[in-house]
Length: 457
Length: 110
Image 1 (cartoon, rainbow over the protein chains, first blue to last red):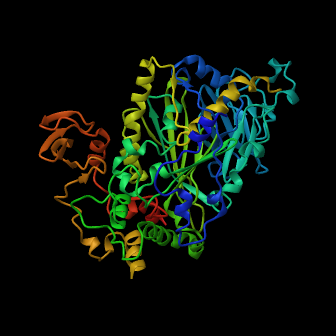
Image 2: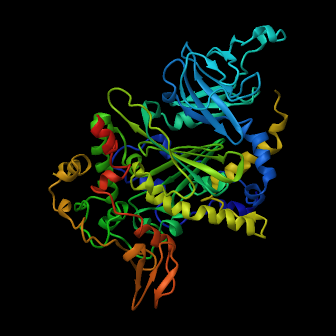
Image 3: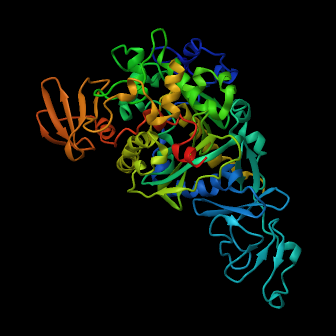
């Protein structure tokens, strides 16, 4: 590391730092928010070809998606024995199954006879029967029936077991890894369980699930949600009430984090907003309407916002909500697990996933799930609401005001794709701190590209 | 008192009776915002267009920020999209994932 890079890596925006803001919290701040990890990750350009060239999509299929732990579904999608869920990634399809003993199993979604997909979608079954010729397996993958068995004397029943894909679970999320020689799931997810210890995502349910096809490489869409640097240009209306450039970024192995404070002004604006103006910005008050709530004298926008959030959650969470600090109720706690899984902390409720749109490297699927707390019996998970390329996020009104924010983000994505296809500069130049989540991603991706091919199978 | 006011907003929807609850939301509401950086006023005009006023100049722009008419020739496209992105749901706090634990749809179901 050079002296120059050291200076650049430790550079931060003017304005109150996130840790300084935590010092003003009205409640005790948990240790997970006090931790900081911002190592120097390099400053080389990221090749444009990663987004534009087919060969890198093929490389991702071969060396990333075939070898990495990846979020497939929630346990609540397969609560009972016989429940199945189909997870597709690029040109591959996997079948997730709840076995009779409650274990979760995963198989390549392909019949061992002529290869037809065993299941076309989710549903509850007692067996895994191919709808082409009727070859059939038990939920545990053992062979159950071969139609016209007299014609298949070569089939050894014990060797005609569905090949298993490795499964890991955390916080109600089901992950798979197609590589039988992969690293243990617990090692892969690293600090994630410790970071989320206070936020019990297992006891949340999928209240909203929206998936949209976007005309851009999946990494372009993902990166639009990997930093707060873009807020100044893409979401200017937020600036009076968001400390965009005062966000904190952390990296731990496969896990990264961006914490963006709300109820504090952006250092980009040249005027000093009042607490009321900050709160108004947070709730999108227009110039021609009365305040949604008036910030009392002596109270800050953060305190009022946290109080409103506590009262909203109290009927569900109970008085335990008082144990959560203002920051947990107000700020954007965006965690990422390489390569494409983004659960937000505390009660932000958001989970993002980004993946290629089938085998097309120039389009992708962005998903947003809301994981909500509940009381009493667990409600069933929401069905996926699909939005096609030309359909607007705002058609998913279950997303509330977030749909309008996504509309601004999505305005950029196809234009980034087009721009990169036209670019003569061969690489993207990233900020050393604010874009450290992107840098961490590419460092990991390049490790998969270069090194993981030797993984023993 | 403040807690009651908040609770009325996040849980009781239109039953809130505060001054804030009787605001100008509703018919005749103009979607108008000041750009935090430039100070220009953005307001929704007819047919999904946006009128932008900065000092003595004003112009009309498409939802994507393309100039349509007027003396002012440039506008922030993302701000244009924001002010034309549909009505603010009411009650406001319930439209935010931060201020409600469940959507009204689920609350009704339960």
